Length: 302
Image (cartoon, rainbow, N blue to C red; front, side, top):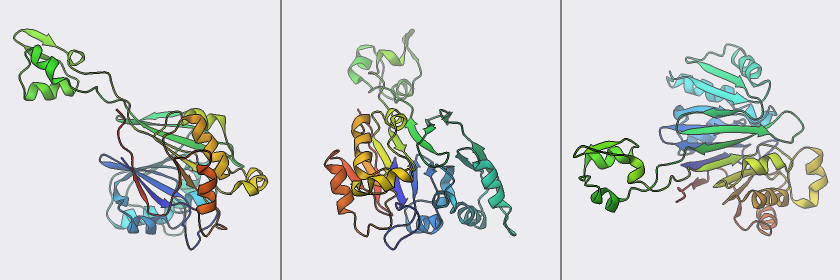
């Protein structure tokens, strides 16, 4: 699993940062969170194929989080896309997407399906699920958790040999969760596999004040990507507009027991990032300011 930060700024694009959009490369597909204006060009500059984007989750309907959709959809269409694109978000996203697709002479050569989600919804996509909770922002907003299903436990070759299982195809069947028969005896996966291992978990807060709901959502996450619009010297301003400071984002990560924290949605006022990153690391040492087009590989946990 690879996270690609397409845009890491907030409010409007700056010389240093485009507005927020995050791609998660999964086996065979790309899942995206938010799609601010200019995202399609960021995709062209990145390692991500926009044709492989299967689902886009929009956190809320402020312009810097969804205005990149029309251009991205048009680019997909002009490049011959045929597979459906599914878009999810808070109340109003289905109506908004429909309106965008009916602007001017806009045409799409493939199906675009948009769905409003209620906070607390969990969507199952086979090998992974996406859950949303209500964020604490100035308008209806969602935070999302993408979590892979648990993986089978490690294959114990010694146990398999003691049970008389010959090496080869039967090993693969057992590793795939299927029982086999050896000399008239049924061998089940549980007999040769260790305890199941957790899948990888990535949580994206969207725009939000510090939230107990997001702390719960991000429990033991491999990566938490959190709103960090301002330094704490502007904490009153952050609270007024429904955002978090770097210190507040770090506190959320610490309470959640997250492994890694990436700070995004930085205000255009920050040309550099050192002051924001330093503040967060004082509370949560594994904090890092994300940069446009930077990448992070999420490794399996054992």
